Structure formats: structure tokens, C-alpha cells
Length: 401
Image (cartoon, rainbow, N blue to C red; front, top):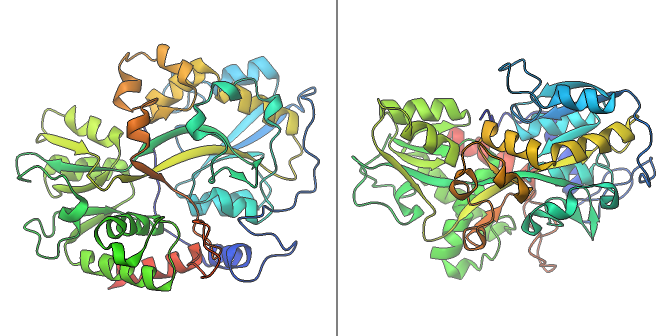
């Protein structure tokens, strides 16, 4: 339960991603839709472990007992494989992208707003799923998706996922909201107490709203925006900026703000809702998927293209997708596990139902984070779409408006 995404984007991100996903390509001529090049052949069999592994992960994904004594699935992995494991955590997808690019890490838990950047940059290696003992047990809706697979080549192993919900203070926000319109209305009675997720990827939330309410824009995918569609989306977010009291990226801070009622309405994750609802000092809050649907995140393990520890890396991907380990991670982190066999092993027997782990109707309402690229991810070829570098620059303008 320690997910810390926020939007501190460095100049290096802009340079690398513009090269990887812009109109001109980087080095090998690869881009985020064709895949990058690798210098290490795809592993054909798992051999003896190299004795070492370096994991780059969201806080809470690779726990070794240092956070809480009983929260530990890294040490058992080391004991079972002989792969001495070091863990480096990161706070944002952009930080993860930069760190992974250094070559110091064998695997990374990448969200959909960074995974394709590593493929485009040539940092992520194709993965031989035949070597993954749990791959077929991972929910089919998370396998071979556009945020972890390119042209049929798998670059990411599903780990866990969650939706971006609309949370509201039930004592204050009346009537109960059913649409995202309540967070975009410039005349909102909740002005100054509205919150939004602090990341360029939040632009997709506004695009999704316009996709449903301004059909003349012809938006069919919130991650594929041409110039006209992008301009309309950014204008909506600039309008929203006037009513936002606080942008959030740290879930603990959002929890505190809703508990103290300095915020009463805005985007959230299920785990945050659970925490506020479990606090006896907090007002009653509810979280819903509005009528337009919602964006969502799905994290995948990527393998570094030039890893010196491929055997230990595959051993890790097999370990972290085991049902019992998936159950531990899902409950500690606050997400739906990718391996549905984990649902029978969680301490809270209703965990998977709360997080909609195998709920197809819930899944169908979601639009999972995908790295926006100049080559439109909705399949259009007659226009150029805005890349992540464009989204980042626009987000900085929105925050400064």
C-alpha cells in the first residue's frame, strides 16, 4: 500500500522519449510501436542462477522485511534460488524509466505510462513466456496487451492492476455523483476542495470525459490525441485547474486530506478509499466508476535488454507471479493480483471482489494507461498524435496556469 506516482519529469525524459517516440527515431530506428533492439538473445532455458539480481520496483512490490518484519517475499526468493537480491524503489514512472535506462537493474515493475518508452528505447528485452511457469494463470485480460506487448512480442509480465476511481465525501457532495463532470465544472460548489492526480497521464482522464461528452471531437482512445483533440483536452484541464485545491501523487496525503475534509471530491484508488473508510475520525466516503468509465493502471515486469543475470531475472518473474506471493503483494500494496489463483490465498477473503480482480464488466469500463506516441495508438495513420513529451510539456503549463 505504498504507491507513489507523481509528475517530476526531468529533461532527460523529454530528450529520450522525444527520440524514442517522436517523428524521428533513436539509434536503431525503433519506436514505441515497433519495439527496440536488444543485444542479448532471448533466453531459451533457465539455467543456474548467477547469484545476483537487482530489482527496480514500486514501493511495496519487493518487500524484504525491512518495512515490516512479517512482510517479506524477497528473502524466501533468495533462499530458494541463491540469487542475492537488491531492491531499489522509485517514486514515479519517469524516475523508473530513467533508472532502468542506466543499466543498473535487471528487472523493473513498469506501469503502462512508462513501459513502452523502455521498449522504444531498446532497454526492455523480449520475454520468452514459455519459461514463465505461472504465465497461463495470469488473467487473460492483462496478457499480451498494448502496454506490455508490441507486434505480438511480449515485453512485460503482468503483476497487478487497479482503477482510477471517483471518490467523494458523502456528507458534502450531494447528490451522489455519477459523472466525471463534477470534477470539471468551473462553477463547481466544491471549488478549492477538488483533487486530481498529479501526472501527465491524467490528461487521459480529461480526454475520456470529452470522448463521451463531445463526440464531434471524434476521440476514440484517450491515449491517442491529434492536435485538435489535444488542444480541447488541455483547455478543459486548464479550466479545471481553477477549482483544484490540491493535486495528489502520494496516497497518504490524499487520505489525510479527505480525512480532514480539505478535499471532498476527486480521483483516487480503491486502497485510499479503504483507508479513509477504515478511519473512525474520517467522514463517510464512497468511490465509484462514473458513467463515462475510468482510466486504470496495470503494472508489468520488464527485463533489461543487456542484463547480466537473465537466469535470476526469470526466476524472479516466476517467483513474483506465484499465487501465494501474488496474494501477499496484492494485500500489502492494495491492488488486484494478476494471478487469479492468489484470490483463494488472501487473508481477507473478499480482497479480490473488492478490487474486481476477475470482474469482466468492471474491466470493460476501464482504459488502461498506455504511453501516448506520435504514431497514434488508436491505429490512425492520416494524422500525427501527441507524444508523451507533448503531454509532459502541456501538464507543466496546466499546473502553472
